[in-house]
Length: 157
Image (cartoon, rainbow, N blue to C red; front, side):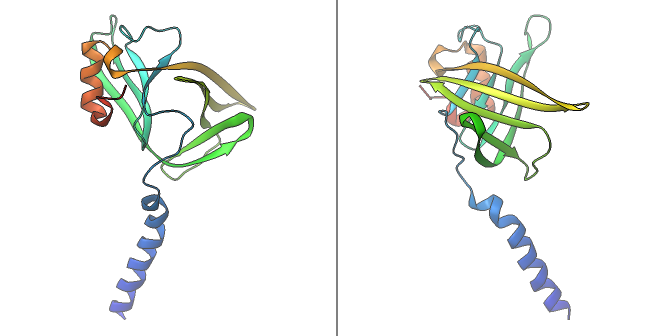
């Protein structure tokens, strides 16, 4: 009896883990790299987003003059899917809640990032126009942060 339980447990674990493990590369309509708001200069930026092919999230310096950090909040993307308006929705951790994170390309090294968050009886939507910064265009400080938290992007042009 105990042997059967072990087999069932292994099969169940394998079935649950298989969908997450099967998707090693994530397909987004934007290139891998460091992305920031289009009103920022790559050489002086202190906050942006990282897409390394498997994860998405913030990379930033904080404090009154951006002198503290760096900090990173990168999450593995477990699934993507096309949604209305030409966006691709990212799912993190196998859970799709009421809020969402979406991205769509608007040209070479340009994207629209849309976040939707439930608030009272409506969905609040925030759009950010993003540009992709090459590794070479970043400040030494941001290069060090990128190298630390997303080393595979430390050479992306």
